[in-house]
Structures are given as C-alpha cells and as structure tokens.
Length: 294
Image (cartoon, rainbow, N blue to C red; front, side):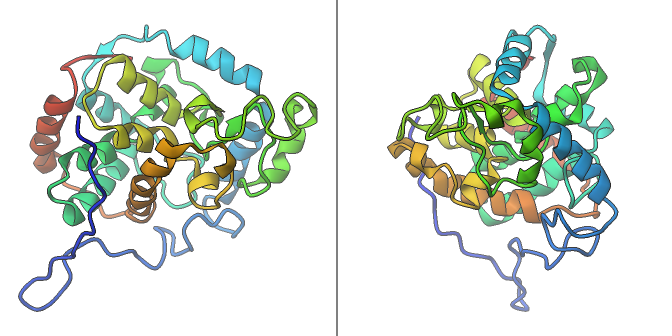
C-alpha cells in the first residue's frame, strides 16, 4: 500500500468566518491543565496508585509473560465495533483528564481528526481503534489489572528514562537495580529501531499485535500510531531517540499529529454514537475482516 504523506491541513470556516476545524481547548474535563499528574484534583489518587503498581511490576520478565499469555489470540472472535461497545464498561484509571467510558474517547478523537483530515479515512479509523486494546480490562477478556493495560508506555530491558511520568516509582522495580538492564542501552543496540524494543505491556502493544494477526490493510502509519501512542516520553519528551531508525523518523510526524487529537479531544460532551456508527462500520469493513481473533 502506498504510504500517505502528512498533508498540511487547512481549517474550514463557516459563512461568519468561524473556524470549523478542531480547536485545542484550554483545560481538561475537570478545568485543570492536560496531563497534570501532580496537581490536586478528582483523579489524582486513583492515577497515582495505577502508576505506582505499573512502575513496580513492569519488568522485562513480566512483559515476556504477558506476551506469551495474550498473543496466542485465544480469547474468541469478535468484530471491531462489537469490541468497541465493550469499552462502555471501562474507565481508564491512569487518565487524569477524563473519567468517561472509553467508546466516547474513541469517537471524540476520531471525529476531531475527521474535521481536519476529511480525505484520510484510514486516519479516522486509526483514531477510533487506537484504544481498543483496553478490552483486556473487561471480564470477557480476563479482566487484567489497570496497571497492566493503561498508562504511559516505555521500553523495558534498558534504563528507565527520568522524564517518564512518576519516575521515582521505578525504585520499586527490580530491573532498576539489574546491571543487565540499567546501564547504557541495556539489551539493545543504538539505532536498532523501535520495533526491536520490548515495550511495557499494555493496550498499545496488544492492539498492534491484534492488527498484525488479523492482517489489517491499514497503512504503516496506522500501525505505528497504535503501537506507540502511549509512548509519551518519546514523542513528547524526546527520550529514547537513540533507538530510532529511518523508518521511525518517517513515521513520527503522524504520531505527533495524532497525539494532539488523542489528548485534547477529551470532553464530557457525549457523541451521538448511533448516528456515527454507519460511517465507522464502513471503514471497519474496508480495512478489517468481519471477525478478528483476539
């Protein structure tokens, strides 16, 4: 498939000159700054507890066990929309910006991108499916704990970068004290490419692997966005860039563009799910099989 080039989008205006494209809001659903992990607020204690466990338990060995457990795709067969509906029961306990059901976040992100990139339908669908891996939290999927599904991701098998959110909580992680992992580039080579890294286990890696397993025809950028959208320490802080290869550098602008919509489209204003459903079902049919192995 031909690789889409990131276009310079132009916002459309109505007759009164009002901009119709996506506009970044000044604050999150709680009136706070976005991704403010240290400000007192409604979500602070829940978020901190999730990260405390995530940073203590996400070791290289744990990631291998999780991959072995979940990448045998034996949880049953299900369509994309059916899977998205399961997210109605799920709230992400690592997110300081929103406590709405996840299907709302998917549609809010997708619709924001659709406004600015009306001709890039693969980008709309990428936004709609980007968090589908959170179904690992659902009882039908074994009800994994939040710390093993959500939150920012980072490589394991190498030093934990100091700019990772709540970095001090890695003091409880045994890999922090293991010289095999805590020196230099750890078990990896500089310039090896992100694909060679073992990322902390969560919904990003799981959904990326589901796409590969079911041979989605979405373009490479979509796979990259799904795989690394929670890798904030890289695409926002510039950490781990020494592992990038030329393909990663080519893909990164799409991820950074996507991140703007993923982060800032979160709102307590609900979408009309039934009205939007036919459009997203048509995209699902275009890029995915009817039933996927999960």
